[in-house]
Image (tube, rainbow, N blue to C red; front, side):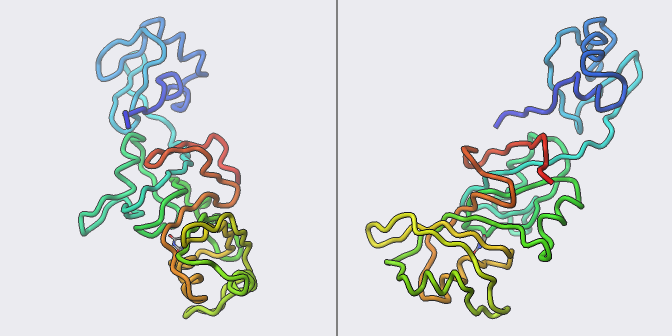
Length: 234
Ligand code: URA
């Protein structure tokens, strides 16, 4: 993914100097430098963490912007910024952002899909705190022909080593070639919860993708790419 950063006029606006349009006028007037070079064209992008922006010879820095986004985490990637074992990290995919953020919760190494990130601790807390029961929706493929009995047991809640699960929503999407495709929405975020729920009724999850988290939706975001949210949907 190419480094995108943010538009120079937005950087100047975020630094509290003027509006974006006012920033365009400063740029056209030759009053803005990036890394010592005078900039006169509109539309240049800068990486806030890396680039030095000056207006009228004075360095400016943006007020800390709140960042909200979602990543489509690939299979075989750790949900963290760094991994002591040197495995590929989801954080590597956010490098072009140029801003320090953290992931809101985690997905297993072998689970794909929607992984929110932010630098706003309150927002993360709101999404993760068990008392809010924020829904998490997954598409799961399980080995075998999922029985009606297993479906109703899962919907009601199953006993796990860390206590019974709350009721969940479950819809059968397809049965084909020895596997069953399901959409499942749970209202908790315990470790490996979906896999353990299916194990508890005798089935193995062979593929798991998170498609929704609260009001956040994966939509058509490509695997390994991220999208910033203008409105964090709080
Ligand atoms: N449930 C799981 O089993 N794994 C995940 O990564 C998320 C939910």
